[in-house]
Image (cartoon, rainbow, N blue to C red; front, top):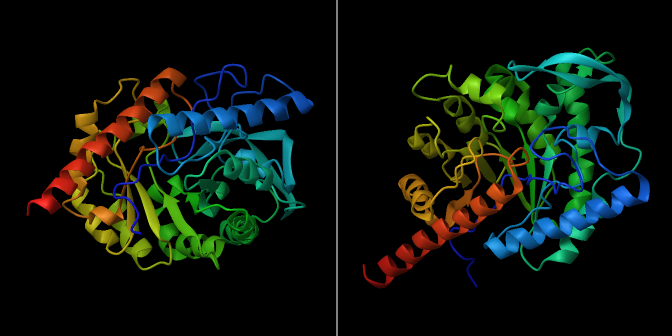
Length: 348
């Protein structure tokens, strides 16, 4: 049986309930500890799945409810990384953040997200996607006081991520997505070693593999940076041909309210394309017909069975009520275009 057209999904994160963490901020501290925190995370995951299903999202995630941040939420489970003595570092050449540092050989003493995927898989019959930070973005989000070699460190993380990803696939993940916003900043590095590290992280997976490349969360530093990029954002032009030649199956990109020329999608010939149809940098909720307009525009460059309507990026900094309305708009907009496609096939 062929899969439905225009299956909707999200980049990964959703806002956390106010009883789990401080709303509307990145790296928000947890509001519970010990077993109470673990139970709160599980409840938040169940709620995130329910919210996506109720809104009509087809491929669901856990909303990253068990992680304070999409990168450090993984790193805090590894050995060789010091979270006690944080270092101020420039992130993505845009803003300063207090980050952990590598102080010894990096290793993964035990699986990190296996229990999260078991819980997610048990909550829904729909396809599930699990997100992991990509090797290049990890390297750009911590201070290396041990390897002192970005490539060597990235390849070490890629090996660790690969083992994790294989375990998550075995537990029922239908899509494993690696988040690589750094791919829009360090294009020379993407060419010289970034794609190699990404493919090492995805090596041997038989589920769908994806890479998410956006222009960042809807925070002031990212919004200000976008204003410096001019009337056309062409960073994808350098990375898409490289990804098109890779083994990665799907690519997530930012389209809604962006200055990305949509014809750059042509450079991803053969890949599934997750078209960002929801702007995460504003609290304004899109109307379904606006979502549909973005999807229709993308269909000029990618076949319907290869297009997956998505959000531009994670929604964790947004108010929860706004994020839920945006999920509904995403599903409703995709449904409009799905009906149009069905009608056109009946009446060519």
